[in-house]
Image 1 (cartoon, rainbow, N blue to C red):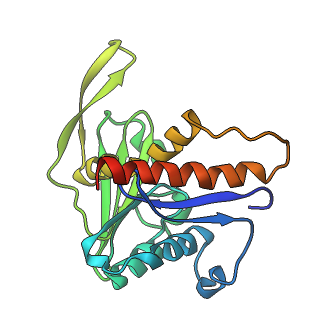
Image 2 (cartoon, helix red, strand yellow):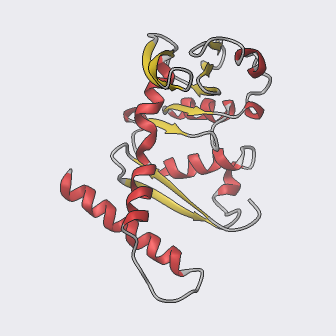
Length: 215
């Protein structure tokens, strides 16, 4: 990332923030993982506060995961699942996206790396979604309600178990983002760093609220 800053956060499914980092460029801690991508380095850095990896499952979106990260997390004891981009698959022989789009909605293809115990699944919804995991499975297949433009209503679409699990737990980071945006602290001035300062205050207030309502 050449310009701007990123606010990385590690959150529970409830939205409580356990760790965060303001990213403005490569840091000394990131240099400890020079053999990994930026996304992978961020995940490992955020998980540094976790004492017992086997008590937690980690979910992230397609900015972060690749097969190397999933293998590293498995070695550390973390169960991890995340959507991934095609250029992160390292020639995984999944069915091509163009071919899958010709199949019925709900179709899927998968490959399992026996040596590294990594599962990669590609599922067709409105578009193809590719997901990787180091512990979850394809089965049992479940049905989900998806909107269909043709019938102007919802219908049942089959979905692999790994995607269903991921969708149930991925929203932890979005909850505090939504609340911080809705109840933002107002500070006079136009300095660019004021938004960073108020962001930390807002995040702290939301975490205190979570502790009060669900200690």
